Image (tube, rainbow, N blue to C red; front, side, top):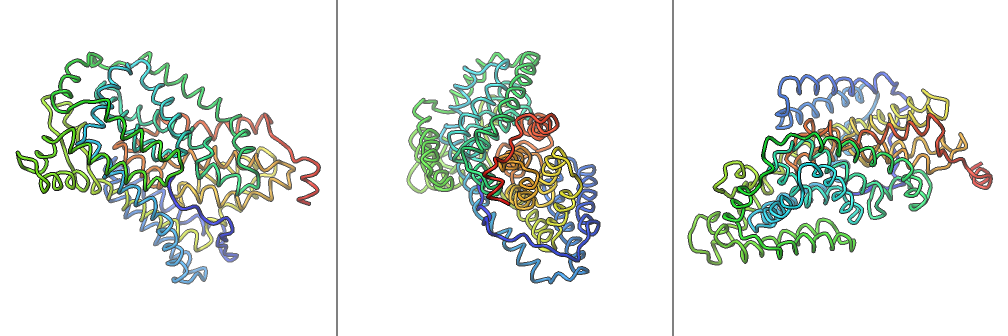
Length: 495
């Protein structure tokens, strides 16, 4: 995720007056309202009704807080802090919308699709999506950037090949979150060991023990799916390729723009700056390679400075479509611009309202303590950590809180059990980092769904890596596989 890291010294609000059942009232209310909402609206629930339900959930939490002596101002301050922490994410979402618009009218995305169709056949396509996105995500340290660049192109290729976009999004996110977990450039990969009390590279080495088997199983599943995939005869792509060529000027030189963006991020350039430069380079490429398309969008036949500016700004800010002579491609070659991201931003803000009030009234801390006290065995400690991360991803709607809160709450418990801190840091990543994208109202789920244009409920069943990871860490704990204990010197230091 691309967000501002919570301070490691930040205190998690507690409330000694709040019992576990009152703390759970807003959770049960939110789950019930969301379930009913999805039943009534289906995927359309993300167009606004889920956002209001999150606000209603926040109102229920505020009422609970009021009856447990939590001041209104404190709740509002916590909400404001939560929304402020998403400022970077919101700006990135806007830039992703802008980038998608200029990369469409410049021919960058059509060029990626054009060459991708010739290289990736349906049998290997899904497994290739996992590998490609894993490599990009390891290199950049960002699942968000991976979705916003190669992810968009791979969705386009899938639509052209007649492959389910839900399956494809699941493969993209499986690879993207593999890289997000293991890359030393990833913010969550740095945050988890900091919360647990271990160092970065010890954490990464220890995490490979569960991550490599999980991604291997994921690849095997996608290979099996690919071998049995029925694309209804769409594998003959000659007509599609001809339509793309007739509509855009296709050139390998257009690959320079995404290569520059990825190189900038590898060089640790801020993703926001890299996406802004990618947008501007895409605009320049549009004026040079596709002047006719820019003029068409501007509503003129002759391209001059004013019409060029108008056409580029249209693509950056509002919905833009490039029509082809193939009706199946018309939906593919459209982008929502910055305006297309506003629904996702709306969802994130409402989720932060609910999460902020839950944190302010002490409910998050109370629920985590209850889970910690529920189990007394080593396996129970791992299980309570996993469930805490899942619960916080669903209730706090923020990936960072799903790492920070359990990390702070469980660090001492792991030491008391004689377990090395890398056990905790690995479990935080296996259950907190990767499952955030499976929840529609979590900032990660909202972001990736908005960027890829695929509802969360459509890809959740195919994001195998993301939901197998918590099971893998529990399997290792249940059979005491590679559960590292504290050394004698470490025990002495922590005593």
